[in-house]
Structures are given as structure tokens and as C-alpha cells.
Length: 190
Picture 1 (cartoon, helix red, strand yellow):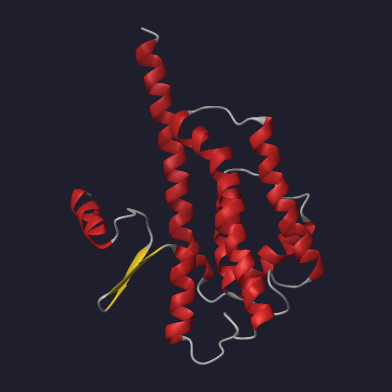
Picture 2 (picture 1 turned 180 degrees about the vertical axis):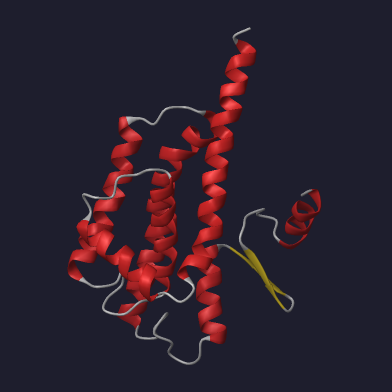
């Protein structure tokens, strides 16, 4: 494990994952990586990241929503709970549901998160939504998110394989963080 951290530090001073190296080019950050891969290897005017400025702006906005609004709401709601066994609060839960309502409203208007075609924004957001499901978030009230999620899982190439590793790791992390917390509580109650 230490060797992996050293390699990541050498290539990425932000110490974040994922990070890719393409020749001598190193790039951290899932949103930047997904756009780079489509632009570099996806051919000219790939529908996953279209050249048309208005559609591309929508795709970018959804990526920024995922990283700037949705993920922070998710992190504030679940990281304390996962890592420190602090209970979720009404305030952080409300923020989480506000961000889900934005996505729900987007999907009321279009089949995909940035229009009528699947884009990199859908790939990014489906990973976030699948993580919420692992953590037991009830998404039943979000009809359009649920329809979109099912559509993504059926249409996206290698969806199960691409998402399953992260889902399994999250389940394991949650299980062991709960067990470790219970062990610490037992030790400190002696």
C-alpha cells in the first residue's frame, strides 16, 4: 500500500484518485480524465462530449454540478457517518436531497443529464448515484433519476464491471468502519 501512495505522490501532488498517465502527461481528477479521454481518443465531435458549444456547456455544467454541488453534499452527509460514526444531520440530509432534486428536474426535461444523448456527464453522475444506493439512500421518490439510472445500467457498455469494484469497496469500507467503531466503543467502555 505504501508503494502505491509513493507512486501517486510522485505523479500527482494533489494525492487524489483517480489519476492517469498517458505518455508523459499525468492528469488527476475523474471529471478531467473522462473529458480528456473522449477528446484525445474518441474521434472528432464525439457525442459523449459534443463540440456544439451549448450542448458542451450543458455537459460541463453537469460535471461541475457533480463535483461542486452533488459530491460535497454527499461528502458532508456520509463521510462523517462512514469514517467517524457521527450520525447524519437533518441539514446535511436536506442539502443532499436538494442536489438530487436538481438532477430530478433536469431528467424531467431530457432523457439524459445533458440533453437527448448520453454524455460523459451521465457516466460521472451514474457512479455517484450508484454509491448513494450502496449507502442505503432511498431514491424511490425520484422517479426520473430511477428511470435514468436503470437506462444507464442497461445501455452503458461494461456498466456492471466499471461500477461494481467501487460499489464493493464502499460496502466493505462501510462494514469495516462500523465494526471498528463497535470495537473501539467496547474498548473504551471497559
